[in-house]
Amino acid sequence: MNVGKRITVLLVWSMLLVTIFLYPVSAQSTTGDNGKKTINLVIVLDRTKSLLQTDPNKLSQEAAKLIVDLMVQNGSKIGLVQYTDKVTDRLDIIAIKGQDERNKFKAYLDGLGVPNGQGTDISTGLKEGVSMLAGLQTLENPVIILLTDGKNDLKGSDRTLDISRRDLELSLGIAKNKKILVYTIGLNADGSVDKDMLSRIAKETGGKSYIVAKASDLPDIISNISTDVDQLSSSISTGPEIPGKAKNLFPWNKLLYSLLGIIGATALVMFLQKGIPKLIENAKPKPLFGKIKLRVINTDTGWEEVRQSIILAAYGTSVTIGKLADNPAGTLNKIVIARNGQGVCLTNSEAGSEELSVSVNGDKVAPGQKVLLTDGCTLRVVVGVESIKVEARFSEF
Image 1 (cartoon, rainbow, N blue to C red):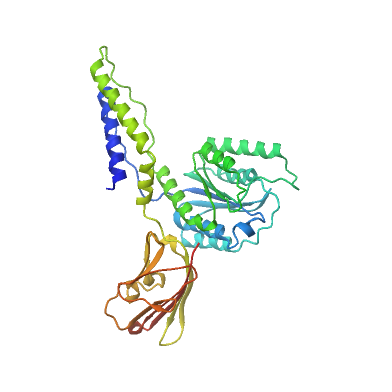
Image 2 (cartoon, rainbow, N blue to C red):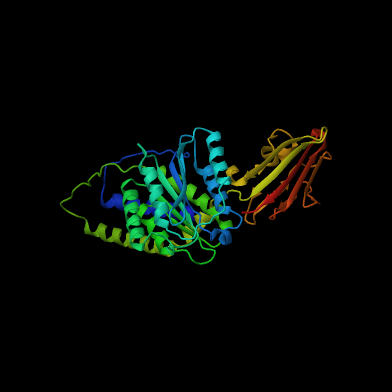
């Protein structure tokens, strides 16, 4: 257990003991499921023309695909809204029964055209997303993830500020009534994002707001949202309040000591409140970022057996070349891609094999050596005894 967790546990136990001392109550125990939860999710994407400058590599679409990989379990439901100053398109909510539905959803994202909207009205995208979820017969952990790269701009639009404000208030009211969490992401590359509006939408619905300076920060934000949503959906419902035991005579000396203890614990919490979250956040394992375009070639026949583009985040914090190449049993399983404090690295853990050649950008990777993968770098692995050659290119986002 790291320092931050030990301090947190100590403080919680101290406050709990003080509370029990002052107000004894009947015990009540509950348990929760820490596994991934099924959710009802709508992704709301800004599709205005400004994305051509703020997100030229279409990383917001890759982030939406990452949401599908990290958050959408079998049994979940998912839909999509595209908006400018109006809803330009939507993909109705579908039930996810397996990988086929996920792949179809991601293929739809790959097929999105060039953003060309002029005006922006965040409320129109939010309104459509809330309406889609509210229209379901039953809601299970409803969530909206809304992404924009700017603020409301109604120049040339047939919408007015009054209509926009009305739709925002209506949407927030329905979201709060239906307990729909809204997470907002502002891609603030040009400094135009309306932080106050995004913060208000998230705060009033129980979600969180994130502001990022560049599109390459999006994978970490999606990972944080995924963890947060799962923790919230796993939270325990509060049971009926159990009143404390009434006392006619109160031990004032014990009250004084207890109050001093509470004041001391509160002061310590205030002193450490900035450090503890940072310690805990730094201790969280970070998923892999980036994408690999990979080819697997049979060197005996010269045939290409596998060609695919893979988002690494779905594999957690590390993955082997063998798993990426659909060949986990052989020597390829000894070549590991993992994330550390520097970034994404490749390690050759196959010692003493003359039948294995591993290189990054043409430079050989020796057994036990770790190499940092940079944007656009090439990977090459040749396993002579298995007649396999893997060629790949790593891209950051």
